[in-house]
Every structure is written in C-alpha cells, then in structure tokens.
Length: 277
Image (cartoon, rainbow, N blue to C red; front, side):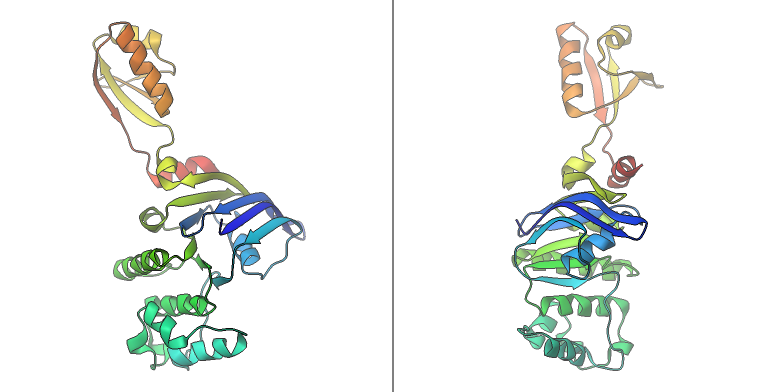
C-alpha cells in the first residue's frame, strides 16, 4: 500500500478537522478524495505532506511524498526553471530540474517568467515542484481549479501519464468529471470521517432507480422486496443489484413475465450527495 492511515484525529481548538478517519491508497493507483468543503480533506493532505501533526492515529506512507495543498505557489518574477532551482537548493536530494520540466510539458517555456504564464502552466509547475522530490506519492489539491476545458483535459492526460509511469497519485477535487475520468478508487470524507471508499464504478453502482413493466403488475407488487411506485408506463423502485436479481427470479418462478427492466445509472454527483447528506 502507498498509504495506510487509521484512526486519524486532529483538532484546531474547538474545531475537529479529523475524527477517526481511515485512508488506504493502493500503490500505483490514482485515488480520488471527495467531500464537501470543511470535511477535513485539506487537513488530511497536510498530514500526508508533513505540514500538520496528528493528535491521534497512525499514518504510514511508503516512500517520499510531493505535491501541493490548496494552490501551488511560485515567484512570478522568476522563470519556471529558476523557481524549481530555488526549491531544489532547499532539498537534500533533489531530482533533475530539466527532467521534471520535461515530464510536465514545460521544457519549451522553462526560461520565461512565470508571471506571464497561464493558470494551467502554473498548475503544471506546481506538479513539477512536487516531482522534484522524486516522490512515490504525489498529492494534488484541486489541480484543475479555474482551468478552461482544454487545460483541464491536458491536466487529466498528464495525471494518467504519471500514473502509467508507476507514480501513486492522491487527487482531491470537486470536479467529478475529473475524478471519474482518472481515478480508479475514491474515498469520500464527511465531517472528518471516511464515509465510503472503493472503486469509482462501485460508487456509481449504489442503489439506483429501476423501471419495470411486467405481464401482471398486481402480482409483481406482492413479490417485490421493496416498495413499488406507479409510473405512466409501469412500475419503479429503488434497490441494489442483489435485490433486483431476487425480484426477477421470484417473478419468473411465479410465472410473471418481465417485459422491460431498465436501471438508471447513478451519476457520481448524486451518489456523493447521498453519502454526505
């Protein structure tokens, strides 16, 4: 595992930021961190980066951590290369500045001043700064914040490339399109606790609404494992996959034909809202 954290607790005065949170991140994965504002995500990232100490709990990270929280900083009056050279001079064992600039696609603009760069380029510079530490875990906090659609797409492509090179990425984002596109697994945080974790596909596969038409709706009602609602064309109900399977088998055993059965895919946004509500 790249990260294994158990029972993390952190309070700032009367405000509890982390309240027994667990986090497990598989090595080589792109892991999403989701939750509303004030859920404790930023404090968790600061813990991983060594910027905040814990009150309680155990946090083990396999290797070096790099990245940024909230927004990457830079000196606008310096070039991109000079920005990284300053950071490199502060590190005991830094990576190669030219190499990381090339990895994030900034080699051709490396010797121009950052003050004239686009937001997307500055975000890439922040990623380059994280890579300068030659990390095994890269922490990114809202890296697509403020980017236009093209910049966001280019950033997603970069994250995929870094993951394909064996880097573990922990991505904190409110952009659910971004999370859905690049993350294999997610942890959902609410009020300082982890309320769900697992593959993105399972999060979207949480119980959703099904639309059903049968040869005998009256008998179907008697066999249903959950309440059924009437629609203009048949019946509707909310159930997980196992309950749907049992219902279909029960209908078949009683001679009730299933004419149509459609399951509405649960959007990632809806699944997230239901978890944190």
